[in-house]
Length: 363
Image (cartoon, rainbow, N blue to C red):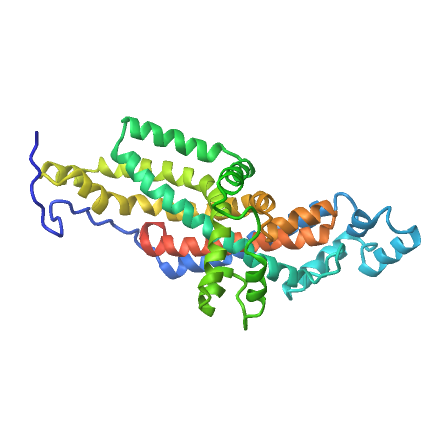
């Protein structure tokens, strides 16, 4: 048996060689280029959404066709400008969204900007909660899997990661509801909060729309607890999907770091495997997580559609399903455009964080 030698706090035996940054790599230039790339990304996505929504004809006919007399339907189409050439409509649409004017929904005549502001915060709250769940599960289990490499614990966690990733979000949500809400009664079945909390949130001055944040700001612990209870199951259902990806990614990167020469040198000097893992291997392994996190935001927002529908969480995903059923393609167009903007901006923020942590990614 090999005796473990006490190690000093700074572990001079385990010093990672300093990385050489690329000559000419500039943080300012990198951020400027990444920021400029936001605009063509949004432009392409908005253009695709606009023309795809027009494949079935004009939005008025799609939403109200068969429910209005032909003369009234033609009048509505003319008033909305949908009888003009499609490229004229397209450039007018670009001009409108540049000023923040997305128009009105056809099915309930609501300002799309108001609808996006009302329900967008609910979706962001769900995505944030799910990301916390994914990080809380994926990172420690990924490190444990690497620590127990090729043992039964590692095999179990790898199967678990694949199961998390392969399980459809709506199926996971239904199972969680059946087990923890219907059978055990531990959590509410649906909704973002109870009715009394919903009312309390609307009476706050300048609410953010994110319930747990508003409850903390107002010092209403009862409302905070109520919101937390409603958030647990939707966050787990959506977070497990990303947790499986993080688990595999952390495992692979930690194993790669543990085979580095500087780690082997520390191991030969008697530094314990636990200290090597928790003090020296996990930091390099987390850098790819930050990069992948940006891509996962899009996955979380896409999964939010099914999760919100399953748990009746009234966010953009819930509304998107409603407007698709109503064939209200103007509202669908606005929601998809907003999600595209959120994804583009989130990826920019992730690029900034990655460039600050790892200078090698800079131009």
